[in-house]
Structures are given as C-alpha cells and as structure tokens.
Image (cartoon, rainbow, N blue to C red; front, side, top):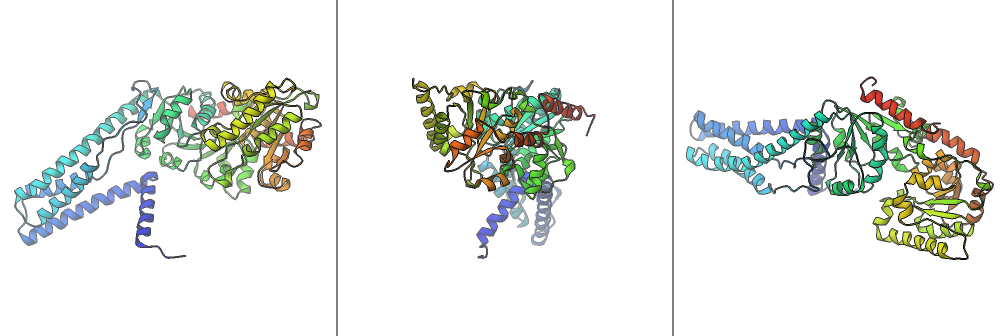
Length: 530
C-alpha cells in the first residue's frame, strides 16, 4: 500500500477533525480551550517582543492587543444559522430552507486583521498604527458577533416555547427521502404513550418534502448543520428521550448530547444488513419486535448487552387482520406484490422489481387478482419507474380484457389511497423480498413468497431467517408456477409461519403490542421507570 502524501494526510486529518467537531461535545470543548490558550500565548509572545524592540507598553496598548486576540476568536467561526420550527406554539413557522448571509469576507478579514494587529504591536510601532488594524478587526468581528447573537436569541425563543410545550420525547431524524413513511410509522405509537413529542430534522434539503408529505401532529424543528449546538440549547428539562428511525451516520450529531436517552426503533423489522449495524451498540436502548431481532445481532457478530433490548412487538401491525379461512378455500385469491427498494449499493439490493412483470404474469396465469404496491422510492428513479409503469400497464390491460377474470389494483389506489396495512387486509397472500413488509405480514398468518435475487434457496433461507416460512422464488423464476401453486393451494408452510410469528413479532396478537408499547413508554415519559 503506497504511503500517504502530505496532501492526503492533511485531507484525512481535516476530515477526522471536522467529524469529531460535529459529533463530540468534549472534543469541541477541547478545541475551544486550545484556541483560547493559543491566543493567550500569541499575546504573551507579542508583549515580550514589544518589550525587546521598544519598551513595556502601557495598559491601554496592552488592552488593545488582548482585545485584538479576543475579536479574532469571535470572528474565527461562521455561526450556523438558527433552527426554525413548524407548528410550535408561540413561534412563527419558518421557511424551508432559510437563507444565511455570506459571512465569509467578514470571517476571513477578521482572521487577517487580528494577527496583523499583534504583529504591528510586537514590532514596537506607535499606538495609532496599532489602532488601525485593531479597529478593522473589531468592525469585522462585530458583524459576525451580531449574527451569532441573533441566532442565539431566536434559538432561545424556541427553547422557551419548547419548555412551555413540555415534550417528553423527540424523534431525531437524519435520514433521506423515506422520511414520510418512517415518521408516519412511529409518531402515533409514541404519542399513544400519552405525552407530547417533537420532531427534530437534520437535513434541511428534506425539510419542505417532509412537511408536504406527512401529516404530523407534533411540532417540527429544523435544526441547522450545527446540530450539536442547536440540540444543546433545545433540550428542555422535560425532554429526556430521543428516538431514531433511520440508520444515518448523522444520528451521531444528535447522540452527542448525553443529557437524554437515545433509543433505536428503526423503521421495520427485516433480515437486511441494515438491521445489524455495529453502531446500534451506541444506543442506550433498542426496541425490537421479537427475539429474532436479538438473535440477528448475535449471528451478525454485533455484541450488544441483553439488557439494552426490550421486546415490544410491532405496535403498527394491530391493524393487520388475521386470516379467517384457508387460502385453498378461496376461489380467486388476491395476492399483494410489494417489492422492496433497491438500496444505494448492490450489496443491499434485494428488490425483485426487475422480475416484477414476469412474477405478476405468473400470478395472473394462476388465476389470482393482484394488488401492486411498489416501494415509495421506486418512482423517484427513472429506470425503476419504467419497471413500475410496465407492471401497471400489464395489470391495466388484463383488467380491461373481457376474456380475463382478473380484477387488479395498481397506481394510486394501492400506493396513495390505501395504506400498506389496508393492502394487506385486502390480500390473501403476499409476494415480496427481504423486507420489513414480510415481518409485518406474519401478523396475518397468511402465506407469503419471497424472491431470492442472488442466492440458491437453501442459502437464502439460511441467510434470511424470515424466509424459513416463505415460498421461495428464484431470480430466474424457474419452478415459480409450482411454488406459487403450493402457496395458493395446499399451503405447506403454515406451521413454519406460526413459529416465525412468535419469534419475529414477540408473540403479541391483536392490539397487545400497541398497548404494551404505549404502557412501557408511558411509565418512562412519566418518570416512574428508568
């Protein structure tokens, strides 16, 4: 491996410094202390040089040198803009995004004028000469300081409003485009504990998108890119719990604050690699749906103490209705096809959307009615959207064909009008991928098939335990007709599904999980349990 160049070493250390400054309060404090100590050392050095080349300066000139150092420190940083809120009583809603003045020239100017003042001072030049760069330093730093004070005042106003609102928890979101689904999934269960909460969002580029695509009842706080600063000021006395729904690395900016407890919820139980990230060990508590999730960490080599886990099922699945009859008794079963998102990297791409049209055609040929609900993100990428349109057209043509009994659902009906749970309740069987959809589907007790896009069947079942209760379709769909005929007929996997339902969903039925979740966090939000 070739040795690092000086430039590469500098870039690497710069990145490490920036990351530590964004995610570690102790590191930030050490940096601030180091800056003040360096400034004091420069003043002492300048004073000593002045004494050597001239004579000891008077108190006034010494105060000017000290003031130049202080003003330089004030102007050292570009203060991040203030956070803003939506729906917080007592504070006007802010725009998404907010604009920030360009303080660059003021910051750079103060960094030049301040040291220049000390150089002129050390050179023994007359006092009026020293005052010129000093005045420039103060003027430039004052602009930066005025903006910083404005940010502080706006943030303090928001903190006072939050203190009056008394939220007990915050959903700390640093994720990307899937936010509407994630936030909607968890806000109601958390509010069911009986106390108000708040949503903190990190990525401002998604602020408007999240506001337009969610119907949140909790105040929405958009923090700046200096999340450590904002959270430190906005964690009011009542706010003791932060919940995380997405695996974003930027969660660490929220987690830098140790005055609250940080809880991992995720946005669904699945066997995907994202379910066993090593950084999950950094959370104070992990809420999982069943013992299968705990075993998943152990199998994945991620060691997390057992006492950090609490098994509460999936509070969202109480709306999913259990099967009332065997699928073999249904003349024309309804099958929900719900392929997952392809992910950002090939290693996490479990989507069968490429094979979707062929899968749907096999279902049509088997005499099934099909509900097609692609992952919400599929339509945000042109190539994937083409696959979706192809399947939509296939279902539309078959429904319109007078010689076909098929009555299918596609487009906005199953993706916008109906919720995922409503789609599940209308279906008698499921075809999906490695996805949390499958785990939730176990609540129904109905049969399901999973598509293995890379692995042979035995390896697929070994790698992904929830597939042990599934009918497995291979990438080339060889034998798919017989596999789906078993799923829609004799249903030979019924016993395996029931065993998985207990381990994956914690053995809760009906509303039991929702009630257990609400009761558990009611006690903690109320301060009667730790």
